[in-house]
Image 1: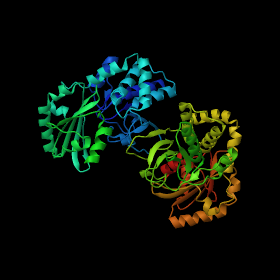
Image 2: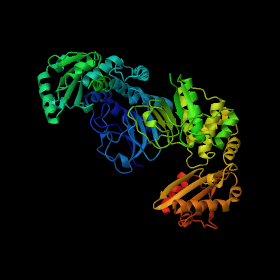
Image 3: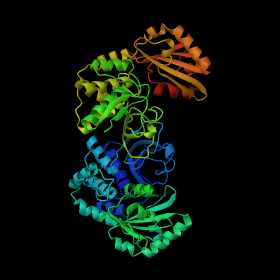
Image 4: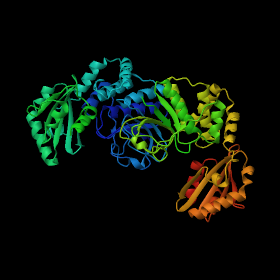
Length: 305
Length: 305
C-alpha cells in the first residue's frame, strides 16, 4: 500500500514541521502507513528543536501525484499547499486557521480557533488514548511556544496555556528557559544578507489604498538589529522603488520583552504615527506591547489608512 | 447577549433536527447561550422521535441577520444553509459531509467520514466530559438509525455501530424494535398527493449526458406502494415531459429487507437493465440489496450511461 503523505504549509515554521511529525506518530500508532513530509527545509528555530531531540527533518516534497492520499496540518488552503493538491485525496486536516478549501467528498477535519495546531493534536492524542511521550511532548510544546511567542501573543488562548503546562511536565523541561533559547535560535540573522532579512517574513498587503509591505523579524536584542539600520533602510528604499510601494514597515520584534521597534519608510510612513500615537524619529519608533502583525498591526493600520 | 443560533440543512431530516438539539444541550452545559433552530418543520419520522420523547420541534428560521453568531450541524455549504449565512459569524461546524464552505476567520470545525453527525457529537460529549442522559442518547440513536437505515446502509461505519450499541444501553431501548417503528413512521405516505410523493426526496442529476431524476421513497411494504403504480407512472410521465428528462427512476426502498423496487420511465429506462443485470417488466424490477442512492445508484448508473 502506498504511504499517506502528511505535510504543512509553504515556508514551513515550527508548528508546520512538528505537527506533521506528531500527526505521523499518532496515525502510525493507529495502524496507518504514513510519512511526515514538508514543503521546504526547517528554519533555524525548528532546526534547534530537531537538534535538541535528535530528530531528522522531514523529506521535502515539491508536489503530489494524482490520487495520492494526503493529510494536511497547519493549513487548509490550496494556495498554501502543494501543487496538484486538487487531484489528491485528502483524508484528514488538523488546523487552526480559516477554512480555505472545499472538497467533493467527506473527510476527517478538525480545526479549532486556538493559537497552534499542536494544541489541537494534543487533544486528539487524549481522545484516541495514545501516549504522549517525552519526544512528542517536546515537539508539541516547542510549536505552541513558537506560535504564541512564549504564551505572550494575543493569539494565545487558555487552551494553549493549559497544554504547555501539561506538556512541560511530560517533556521534563523548564518551558520558559527552553522556549526562550528556542526563540533566540530563530533570531540568528548572521547567515542572511540584507535582502534575505527583508524577505524573511514579508507580507505584501493593501491597507485600503495604501500599497504596503509589512515584514517582521524576531530578535532577543533590538539594538543588535538596529546596528544594521542604515543598510536595512537602503534595502527598504530599493524595494519601495521597485514595487512602487506607499509604505514599508519593518517590525523588529523583541521576543523577550514583547515590544516591536518599527522602521517605517515610504510616502505614507506618517500613518504609523497616527495609528499608534507615536513620533517617528529618524524613521523609527518603539511600539510597546506590539508582537502580532495579524492582530495588532494590520487591523489598526487599516483603520487609520 | 444575543443567542447563538444552531441549525442544520434545508428540508430537515432526523439527523439535522436532533443534532441541533443535541449540540444546543452540549453548548448550554459548556456555558454558552444558544438556541436550537431549523430550516423547516420535522418530517414524519422526526415527529415520531420528538413525540416519543415529549420534545417540541425547534423554532423555524428563514434567514439570519448580519453579524448573527451561528453554529452549523449536518451541513457545510452555503447552498444547503440559510440565506445571508455569508454575513453571519460561524463559530462552530459539526458535520459528516464534504467541505463546502470557506471563511475569512478561524473557527471550530469537526467533521468525520462517518454515517451520521450524531456519531461525531457523541464523541464530543465524551471529550468534553458532558453526560449523555437518556433523552440525549435517544436523540443520537434515532439519527444514526435514520441515516444508516438501521445500520444496513453502505454509508454506515464501525463507529456508527459502536455508538448505537452504547447509546441503546443509556437510552434503555431495544434499538432494532424502536428503530424499525421510527423508520416505519417515516414511511407513512397517507397524507401526501402523488405529486408530493414524487417530490419528497427527488434529486435531479445528469448521468453523463442522461438528464435524470432519481427519487427515493422509504417503505415497510413495497406492495402497498405498488398499489399506486398506475398513478405514480402517470405523474412521472408528466414530469418527464415538463422537464424533458431522459430517465426518471423511482426507488421504493424496503427498509425492513434492504431492497429497492425501481420504477424506471423515459427513453433511457433500459440503462437500469444494463447497470443491474435485471429485466424491467412493466417498467419495474427489484434491485436486491440496493438502499443507498449515493453509493449504490448514482455511481453505477453513471458508469453505464
